[in-house]
Amino acid sequence: MILPKPNRLNPEQVAEITAITKEFGCHVQPIIGDLRTIYAIVGDERDELMINRLEGLSYVERIDRIQSPFKLMDRRSDLANGRLTIGGVTLGEELLIIAGQCTIDPKNPNLFYETSAAMKEAGAHVLRGGVWKPRTNPYTFQGDNKSLDILMEASRRTGLPVDTEVMDEEHLKLAIEAGVDMLQVGARNALNYSLLRAIGKAIGDRPQTSVLLKRSVHMGPLNEFISAAEYIAAFGNPNIMLCPRGTTPTLDGYRNHPDESATPLLKEKTWAAVVVDPSHSVGKAAYVPAAALAAVAYGADGLCIESHIDPSKGIGDDPKQAITPEVLTKLIKQAKQLWAIRRE
Ligand code: PEP
Ligand code: MN
Image (tube, rainbow, N blue to C red; front, side, top):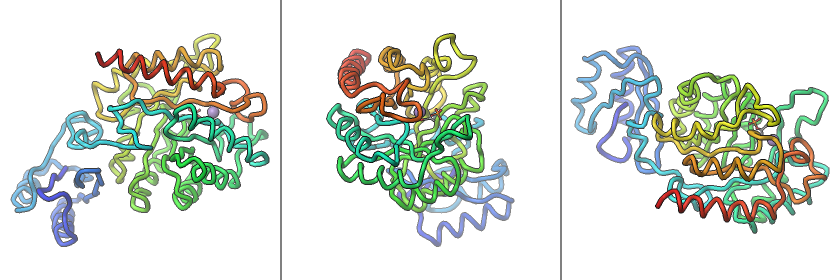
């Protein structure tokens, strides 16, 4: 990783480091941070001669060689100095609340507008709404491009940034063009490396875009989760939040096995913010507040919660696991109190 002396290098300097790394079979990937841009050397960066030549350049502060399977996401990486601010909240300084429907019903935009207004009123900082849905059953509702317009209209009406899941590169393109602020990578796609790469690269089109990376139920060790995030960072986007959302084998009675306890373990390894999704973890509205508070107690930086103005009228997961705005309002209040206690 090349740490430059100025905040970012000029095109001639980038061309020079690119030419040097190319001689050694590597290439350079800029990682645009909020404070400065750093330059990852992609490829085998161990060649001493390459390192010496790069370190000899007047505009290079130093070359960081972290021996870690995820050198950009590692706690010791220079990226750890960056700060991610979303919807007016700087991660780590205030609890981030992402809330909204699992799924936007394209036939009933008003429901989503009402939910959105209620999320803002309850104190959410980011609005979530599923436009495209990964469904186990191919004959159930799969999402609709029309819902993207509804999502962006809700963003305009509330002034809140929005989060939606992209399942392929076509969704990614549409979401970036529409101005979606936070791209969600779902549990099913968290191991889809070509999608992770494309999401990393997409930051070039919109530098403020952040990524909420869910933990796949198929991920084994936590290193696998952090390595998935490394893909996104290595291809250009460091604005990543890790999202435990329950894993397998399922704890009898819950939808998955709640894994908010992974939070402190992740934080030992990586600087990335941890935003826990208690909704998919337990899968039932009645258990969501306890799982959410447990996540805060474990050190979560934020929560991503499914909530609906009238869950019985919802589609997708909403009838069973969305909490009402009243429950959300109380939960946010308690979560903030717990956040303050945790920091005493
Ligand atoms: C969702 O957020 O609605 C969703 C499908 O989540 P996951 O990918 O965690 O199952
Ligand atoms: Mn859902």
